[in-house]
Length: 256
Length: 219
Image 1: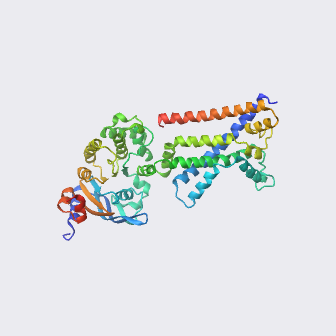
Image 2: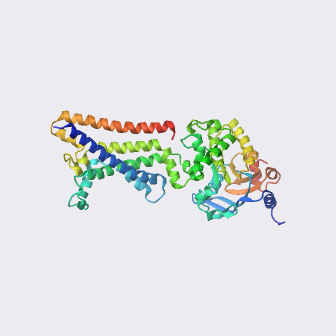
Image 3: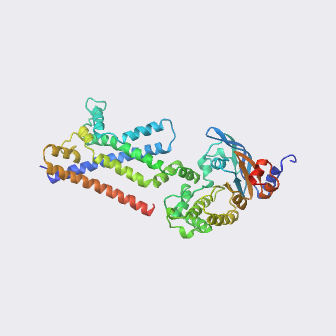
């Protein structure tokens, strides 16, 4: 135990506290366009935490997210999801346990209510269960008044709230957020980050939040994972990261 | 001299033949166009080029090839289909199905490619994803249907070659117009032409109303 790096001991401490890992990755490599675009030696995500994955453009953030959503196949390595190897179940079943929100809302050409219902309908959730769940999440995200509006009539911020509701209504065991704020103007972004900063912990949503913006990552993430040039460099709490960057490149990225 | 009953019979037969041909073209063209737009398989772009070429097939050439297949001495001669309404349906499917498939493919390719990732990420199975993509592209897909119907209700070459323009059996509006013009009966030819135009307008008007209503409701 003692010879393990400090980060690892921290994982284990957190483990004991939070009672379980939602996601465990070890020795993962993903190829894109013939070359290795992403390598992750080890990454654990604890139940209920928000892990912010930060890195500059082209660092492999989206590759990581697509791999975690099983929209890309890793070259090697395994993703363990709630104690089971992810590959033990079909990609479809796996995806029905997670939620995905992308940079643009990508809403369907229907009402807000129907958009939020779409994932539940894919899963065959009975109609009488759908309505209360949607109402809960529209209220949580402050968009109850938009329920009957057409998706194409929404502003960018409203659209992203609908996209978040559409994922959160599924009660995902893991929520994947891919740069969900980067297309929003600054005041809208700040308000949405503040709201999510309450909503995610209140509901205990285990989240992986991908961003190029260090300030956003610090605001929303319980822990930060630094991704540089296709490699996961360090995973720590924000304080730990500032005090002990393990690599000069990480220190440079943090501006220390 | 045409009697009103005969004009009615010709009109009904035209609508029936072209309606069935369009429906079959939709059943074939929608899945094929979807596969070409969303699938990844060897020969995809070759097939897409063939379909796009097929969108401009001259009906009279289609008529010739279908007729050669269906002639008594042809490979499918035993089916005894030449000079029947079924033969016209077959030729019209050959004309309309590439139109429907090609326009379906381009309609789906015009959608944001990230929509597929988002749908998969929301837990959609492949059929559920395809259904949602069709729904998102419903306007251009209805346009594909209109184009397919427009191509076959107005063609004359194929209907003439494989149908033979037999009175009360395979005479349709377009072949009747050719016949009347040939006989010098211009008033009848013009009357039938106006009838054909009106029918084409009514069918497309109905489809447009459906299209625009779905756009407004967003369903």
